[in-house]
Length: 543
Image (cartoon, rainbow, N blue to C red; front, side):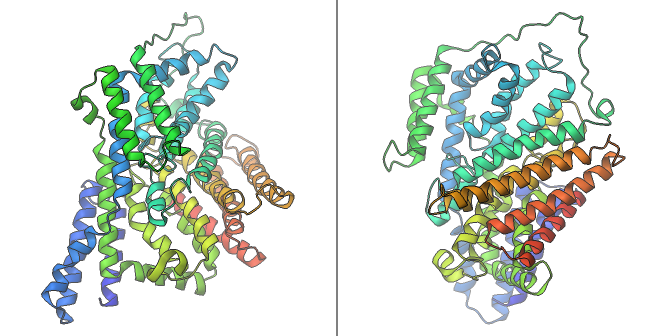
């Protein structure tokens, strides 16, 4: 395949991705990706014909594209949606809402309950964060001014924004069709990426809440949020929730299926088989029909995943991956960003260009990630820019970033659902979610993968000290930025300038931490990582 075809296919990919984001192409993203795939095949076919290739080589191109589709995440995604449909119609989500609502009367109190609500999506990770959002947002609404009035408007904004980014990110570590399973399917190690992602999500969610508290809601809350606090004199109402017994039983079956698969209690039985068996059992216990179960399938992430795989296949056939790898190598070796800076920029790419489903770009770009590694991982596709440790750390941070990017996406992401709940304009929560993902979620996943998952002796004193210094540094810088750059403080005046400074400082430090976790340890490499973080922050602010 001529090299210029690879450049054309990359240009087509960028147009397909950026067109919907900037409202230039008024078509569904999946449709655009499929059309882009067809265009790449047509260009590739014409180029082969001009080069004298036979008809058989040209006609084999669609087959090669279809061969790029990885069945494991698609099957797990569909079985997860079937399970979600069974849970919904059996009353399991009602039972979960009731459990959460009653938790405030326990020693957890209201504060512990809202923390539990925010982290539940990652604890019970489903194949798409919209499932948990649909189940938990009614609970949050019931606690706010339009419900029993336990939470004020500012608290609602913080809770809803943090919950949205946790819901979005939760599909990364999900073992029932999550984005991480695309990577795990390629390397053949299930659950290998789960723990680092969960760790990063937990910490990143907390600092998203802090950003919302100290930044987003500081100056113009009343102008941007159409919710209003209730009169304190108004009598508080009770939140009326009920759940059938079958709902509790179904929830228990789901937990058994999930924990059994995660901890290997069912041997080598595929998780899709376990989920289907659990779904059938729930249907029998609750009397749920097949039509109700099938209605749980959410087509958007399924079609997004398939469209992403098709685009990835067209890039592979036309040489787009080779060209992209060459460009990454050239930029890493011949620019002041270096390999460390380019790795940081690549990790943050999905949040810079947030799609309504992180699977879209993940399916298209994960083959590129693997191609950057050594032959022991990437085989004949290997470019060899990174060793095994570096490519694994990059993979963990990239996937959690891809999953979470659905939160701040302005074109149908989970965050837009949350913005509808608090009656705000589209994009009101985006900067806080992007900051949490960039500053802590991705770096913490990288640190966790490098120093806990890959380290031979993770409990050694020196390793624990390294983890403590990196985590403490991220926490300290994050808190310092949030404190000093408050838009209502004395140091910085104005929300826009405060946000810009926070992103630039946070991007630099998080970039250096990611570079360190990838074993780029010299002062020059750490500086390159910081520069990559600054560039990522600038692009996040521009898109």
